[in-house]
Image (cartoon, rainbow, N blue to C red; front, side):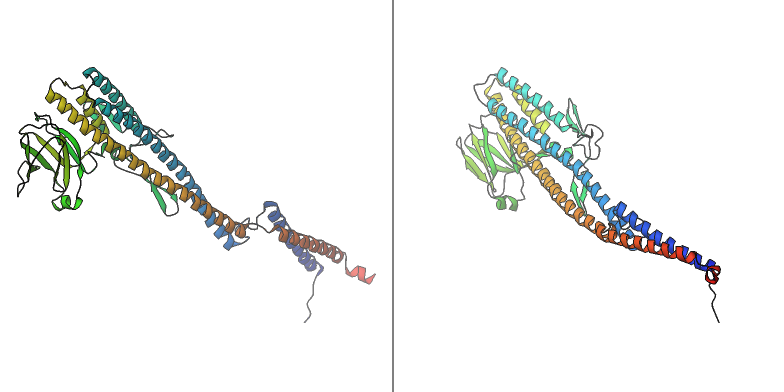
Length: 406
C-alpha cells in the first residue's frame, strides 16, 4: 500500500507549521515586552493560580497597612489629648496646693475656683475631641456624636463601652482608642486602693493626713473593707466597721495631734484636735469622673469658710480633692502607657507586613516574571527557525510535476 501526499496537503502542513512558529515567536515577544512569563492562565495554569492567590495576599496586606495608618493616627491623637489633660491636671494640682495655703482670702480661693472650672470646661472639650475623619475619639462605637454632655447636674457619658479591634497584620488585631467611660468617668479615688473622708458633721479641728495600706495581707484577710475612726473623746478613739459598729474584739487607742493610727493593715494620720463624736472613714477606693472631682473641688473653694469648723471642713475637702487629682494623673499616665504599647504593636506589625510583602513579591516574581536573558535567546532561536521554515516552504511551494518533467 502506498501513501500519496498531494501538493495541497504538503502546502497546508507547511502553512500550519509556519503559523505555529509565528505564534511561539509572538508569545516570546509579548513576554519580553510585558516582562511577564505568565500573561494569561493558558500560559501556565498552575503558576497563574498561585500568582492570583499571592495577589490577594498582597492586597490584604495593603488593607492592613491602611488600617494601621488610621489606628496609628487615632492612638497618637489619644496620646496627645491625654498628655494635654495631664498638663491641665498638673495645673489643678498646683492650684489646689495653693488653695490649701491658710493666708489666702476667700476672694483668692474663689479666683482659684474659677480657673479650675475653666480647666474643667477645657477637659470636656478634650474628651469630645475628634479624629481626622471627624469621628469622636472617645465615643466607643457611637463615634458619630459628642460622647460627653455637660449639664447643670454634671457631665454625662452617652457613648458606649465598645472598644474596636482593628486588624493590622495577619492574625494580629489591636485595640482602638479607649471608650470615654474608661478614660474620663471611672477614675480611682484616693490613692487608687483606699480613700479617706471626714464626716460632714464633724465639729472639731481634726485634719486628714497621709493614709494607705501598709499590710495588704492583713487588710485582705479581713475582706479589704472600710473602717471608721470614731472619737469617743478629743484624745481617745475606737475603730468601727463601715456600719458604725465597734470591732470585735474592740480596737481603741489614745490620740495626740500628728499621730498615725494603724489598724487592720491600714494607717491614717490625723492633725488637729477632733471633737467627741467626730468620724473619719477609710474605705476601698471607689470610682469618680474627673469632672465631678473638679466640681467638688471648686464647690469647696467657693463655700463659706468664716468659722473654724467651716475652715477645717474646707481644708479636708481640699485634701480629698488633691488625692483624687493625683490619682487621676496616674490614671491618665496608665492610659497613655496602654496606648503607647499599642503604638509599639503597630510598628512591629509594620515590620512584619514589610517582610511578608518582600517574600510574597519575590515568590510572585519567580512565578510570573520572565527571565529576560533566556527569553531573548529563545526569541533569536525562534526567529532563525521561522526564517528557515519560510525559506524551506518557499522552495517546496515552487516544486511541481511539470518542473520535474522539464
